[in-house]
Amino acid sequence: MQIDAKSAEASLADIDVIVARLKQSSFYRGASTLIIGWGALVAFGYVASSFVPREAGLIWVILNGLGLIATVATGLQYRRKGADFEWRIVIALVLFFALGLVCCRMGHFGWREIDAFWPILFMFGYALAGLWLGRAFTLLGVAIAALCFAGYLWVERWFDFYLAVVDGGGLILAGLWMRRA
Image 1 (cartoon, one colour):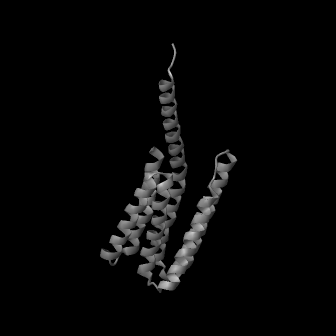
Image 2 (cartoon, helix red, strand yellow):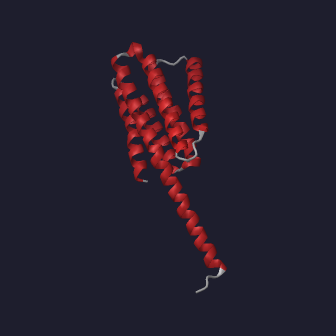
Image 3 (cartoon, rainbow, N blue to C red):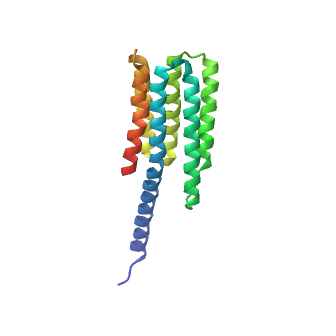
């Protein structure tokens, strides 16, 4: 049996599509662990900050430091397995933190504005990353940012708890969904 050039070309194109889907699925499964971890840290941060508001700054510095360490450790683990780790992700996180700090200083935000600003900023980053990494990141970023903004407008007394559920819980749910992708 002989295969003509068009059939061979179509078969190779099908194989390329399958390989791309497998790579994206593998990436999503790996990213899901980090997203779940960040979600847990974020949820804990909002809850802890609501109980000890005077220590909120220290709580967030510690939790964000732990998240960055986990991100780098995960990247090193993947690199040992022979997979590519994009150090640009860590650099992007650091740049987002730097931009956020500059904006907070320039904007003279109150605690409520700061609580709304950070998840919206980082979800903007997720939405942008999704343009290269896959739709799931874009959908995640837009959905959580919209819910955070809605909470800023309409949730009064329990805003930190709302953000723990929406931001932290949203990241955890997205990470669990990505494991199935």
